[in-house]
Image (cartoon, rainbow, N blue to C red):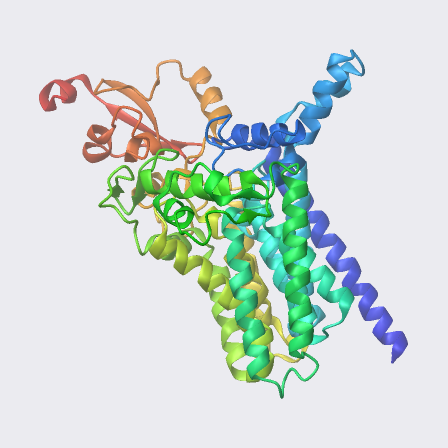
Length: 537
């Protein structure tokens, strides 16, 4: 039996290596084909500033939500600059300066997520479903799209899924090494996205559940939980200070320069004014600036959903409550959605309540908290990329549908195989243009802009494709400021009004139907001179 076990383990390891290799190839080609997106230069610039030990956010623009993890993407450019000043290795410097090289750390993070998905599914369902989950992760269009950019969305997904995985291992076996590792990963997650802070209340919730369910968690004594809490706080302070270059830790709260009303009210609390804050200054500074920017809408455009435009500069606009539900419905592959619900059905039939609590319960609570909070309490609804951790949870639980695959009836095997093939074909029909991917509910891709825009569709990623098209078609007019006759190519964000800083293209979106797409995010219209004269501006 041990020989058979080792053979199966070796086979699983080989299959996982093949899937990760496939993911690396798919992601690398996508990264090489995409033009620089709107946010990447700012992330890279903040990463460079961290490498120069200047993490303060107010010395540059749009650094409100940028995070220290971007140093990983910025390091190749920083090294190229260092070598170039010394006139060494010019060809190597040119290579390091390429955008594709800056994206490599994010691709590696995507591969790490695939491994974490495998580990989660392996612990919950076994080797076969774990391989299925990792394959679904490698084929997920939204994970590919934002796992190939020099931004922080993929790091956030890795941080959340990794934190939950190691926290669960600590709850199951609360040893000091596991407590140290769990606290460390929780702290590292905090330098990926400001919203990663929600992991700490989540951890506290499940620790409280452990206290009240002593029969299930006999080894989790209050003493061990308190020790874990102390370790987590310690790692939080240490990791943040290292990441932000020990910039002014222990600054009194009254000395901060806050802008957002919640932080100003906090600062004015008498008992807190003179409290020294142990984290570095840019940490709270970033949370404050992010809240202020979200409330005033000055770092992103209007919010768009199903033909409706929300003015983020208006205090009466509070976001679309259904934004992420709609994004999931149209941007997640239908086959993957079906597999997720099949996985949930398996969990409902086979999982005991105690096992569910520390498995799918922990994952689903984290995913639901993220989606619901951003749906009801956030105005920065600019893309499905903000809920990447929830998409990773989806592929973990979808793996449950493959449990006991070898003993399944033939019809069920055929169904699961068909869904996987459908997923691959659907993603392949867009490949390598993953950012604008929408599923088959969008029957006419030329009308995808009527559903979603911004980083769901048009994030600057198709600039190279558009340039090539314009060279072959010099008569085409790109983004005209007003009504003109001819062949007109218009980006989705201009077309929908997301870009409030650019002239509106409502005259085109409401009166005409595109005849073609370029790069899936630009739409080609034909407007006659007679029509312009008759209709007017």
